[in-house]
Length: 393
Image 1 (cartoon, one colour):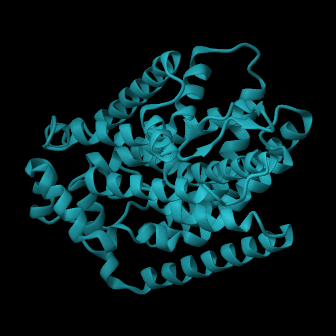
Image 2 (spheres, one colour; image 1 turned 90 degrees about the vertical axis):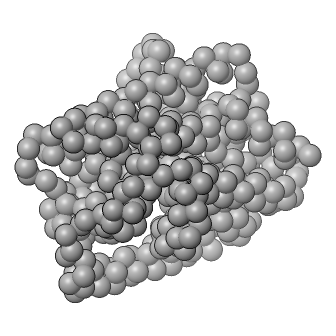
C-alpha cells in the first residue's frame, strides 16, 4: 500500500515500507513551525516581514533574546530544505510505482502537481503569505519530467541549478551589503501592525493579494535550489540513504558529518554577519545543515530499539504532513492575530519570546497527538483524503 503526503507517496519503496521517511517528514513539519511561529507572533506578522525586512543576525542582549536567536538560527531555512529533499524522494517513489505498473510518466502526476498548486494558492490567499506548496508544485512538474531523462542529464541539471542559485545569492548579497537602505531602523508602519492586531480576515486577504508579487518572490529566487534539492532527494532515495541496512547507515553517517561539519560554522558566520548575510545563511548554509539534520535524525532512529510514543506520533504526522502543515498555520493565526485570540499583541511585551516558544510547543503537541489519534481511525489525513477524492474524479 502506498499513502500520500503533501501530494506524493512517501511510505513505500518497491512495496516495502521506509519508516525513516515518515519520521523525517514529521520532524520537518515541526521544524517549519519553529520557523514560521516567529512570523505569526512578530510585529505586523507577514506584513512586518515585508515592510521591515527579514530576520538576520544573532542577538547578544538578554537571555531571552539569545534563546530566540539560537532557536531561529537552528530552524530558519533548514527544515524548508529538508522538506524539499523529502519531496524529491517522494517523486522518485511515485515514479518507481508507475514504472512497475507500466503506467506512463508523468501521466496522472501532472494532475496531482496542479492540484497541489491549487491547494497552495488557497493556503496563500486565506491563511499564510509564505506558503511553500505552490513552489513545490511547479518544481515537481519539472523534476517529474527530468526523471524520464538519462541520469547524466539529471546530474548536469543539478550542477546548473546549484551554480545558478549560488550566483544569484552571491549577487544579491553583494547588493544588500552595498545598499545603505537596508540599514534602516526596522520599524513597522502602524497600518501594517494594526492590520494583524485588529484588522479583519478580509483585510488580511486583501493585503496578501495586493502584495502578491513581493510575497511570492521566495519560490522564484529559490527555484534553482529547489530543483537541486528535489534531485538530491531522488539520488539519496535511490542510493539507499533512507533504508535500514548497513548502506543506509553509512550514507547517513556521512550526511551527518559533512552536513553539520560544514553547514553549522557557515551558518553561524552568516548570522554573525547580520542582515546583509541573511540570504547566504538561509539559502546556502541552511541546506547543508538540513542534510546534516537528516543524517542526525536517521542515526538516532537507528539506535531506537523499541517503538516509542514519540516515534509513533512523528510517523503519523509525517504520513499526514499536508494536513499538519496547513493546520499549524491556521492554529498560529487564530492564536496570534486579532481575528482570534490576539495574543501577539497581548503577550508581545514582557512575555516575549517565552510565550512564542510555548506556542510552538503547544501546537506541536496538538499536531503530534491529533495525527496519531486520527490515523488510528482513518487511513489518511483530512486534506490528503480530499486530494485523493478529487483526483479520482
